[in-house]
Image 1 (cartoon, rainbow, N blue to C red):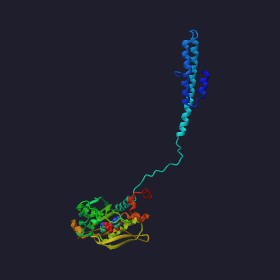
Image 2: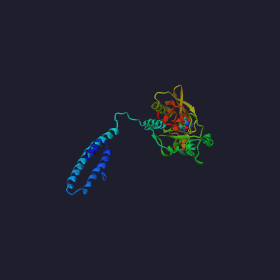
Image 3: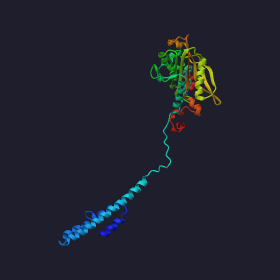
Image 4: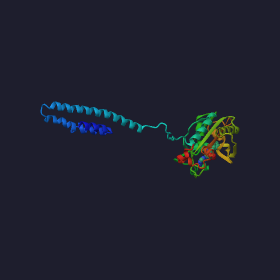
Length: 319
Ligand code: FA5
């Protein structure tokens, strides 16, 4: 039995098999254990010799089991470790972490440029009283822009601002000249959406009020912004009408074969300065409101403004 047990130990290929061998020979019903039980039925003079012989073999077997178990366990651990190991020389997998939206980037670039030119930025409400969006901007009471068709009204007197120019009266309520203030953010208009018009878009508005400001200052300031944003491009001013400026201009830059209209500008209407308690004989001002969305459209050749709001990562990932 002891020799069979020794063979079984040597032939066990895994720790689990070895455990099986141990149970077979040394377990409660094991074969060596069974021999020890026989001791009780032997004649008294044979008992010590027989018992001792079985115990020696049992000790041998335990030692053999222990040695074999150590070897097998070490081999199994080594196999497991090499199977689980990480090959640090394999190339990694790229994780795309996202990034700022192209409109956000454009707004930041505009902001950085104007701050470098001495303008301060503040945020103003998206929901405006119509006084600020229209009335205080010198719109006559029957102006078509008041029309609900162009604006999203929240209640009788509040609407989503249609232009960041709504910030002007807020600024002049709180600051006296000299003023160099700007704001940037969302505007909303109830109009037909197409490739270049959205119901929600972005504008940057600027207001400067000081002694001796002229249209030349407006032009120089605009030229500097354009230079910082687009490099050396030709700018174009054409007469235009806005109730809050006199004279008013439409501003554009040369882009490829054509012109990119950026927005409107002009000298702040004296009526507005006076209504804000600013002496229009002493002070003059200039202002502009430029669309943001069409800037990245021109730069990257994006042909549909709606792509900005669709959140298709295949589009956004390119920026
Ligand atoms: C204005 O909003 C005037 N407040 C600009 C202004 C400010 C003039 C200060 C004088 C003094 P206008 O409606 O043209 O002007 O809009 C200005 C620019 O905003 C447009 O040139 C265009 O770039 C952008 N814009 C206007 N409507 C949309 C729209 N639906 N979708 C995308 N961009 C728009």
